[in-house]
Amino acid sequence: MPLSMRSTIGKLIHTWTAISVTPHAVGLSVRSLHSTCTAKSNTTLGQELPYPDGLSKLLNPVGYLKWKMNVIDNARANYEHCSAQFEQQPDFVKSLGLDESFQGWFSMTILHVWILNARLRGEGANGKDMKQEVFNHIWLDVEIKLHQAGVKTRISQITSGLLDSYYGQTLAYDEGIYYGDSILAAALWRNFFGGKDVNAVQLLKLIEYTRRQLVHVEQTSLDDILSGKFQFLPASPLA
Image 1 (tube, rainbow, N blue to C red):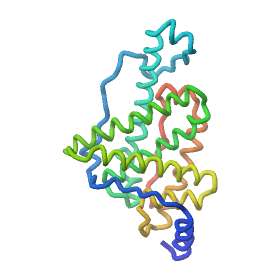
Image 2: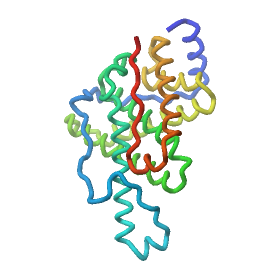
Image 3: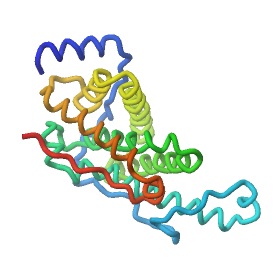
Image 4: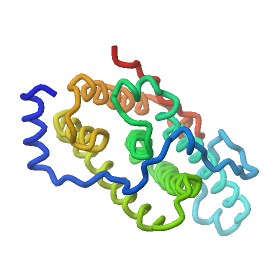
């Protein structure tokens, strides 16, 4: 990284309350672990059912349950789109110099969940419910991956550390969008590269990718998002 950029980010980090992004003792291969919960409920996957009001929840509990399971299924589809990006874009991941590790997958997944949530936060009750169910799927998937990796002890401790990391990363990205690309660069630098030296072009590429996806999700119809049909744009690898 050029000295001027390193100095700039160094000053930002010095004034920023850094939150450690270290999924301790989880140096796992993503390709050997990538799987998600596949059990599907008997609902209208890919469709958005009308949001039930308070009275309908009482008078039609079966209908409410059907609606809830539909939200869960569509949220799973949205989460899977987020969690699959690390594996589906190997050239982009390689161009950023990221290792094929659990930490790399986790950071990439959380970035995409945050991008999706940036849209959902402004969409009322429907957005709130979808956001919550996507959040639930993160930790179901994390637990599955830990068990598949043979991790049998300290799962609660590891998950707690990852939860802290999740909140730290998403808060830093929120600040980055509010205060500008210099803060966003610092957040991405910490979360993806652990504060290590990185090629400035790689960091710029990740910033541009993030901005592009934010515009894309904002331009996507809410119906497509709530029905689990949203797809992220592919990235171009660095030359």
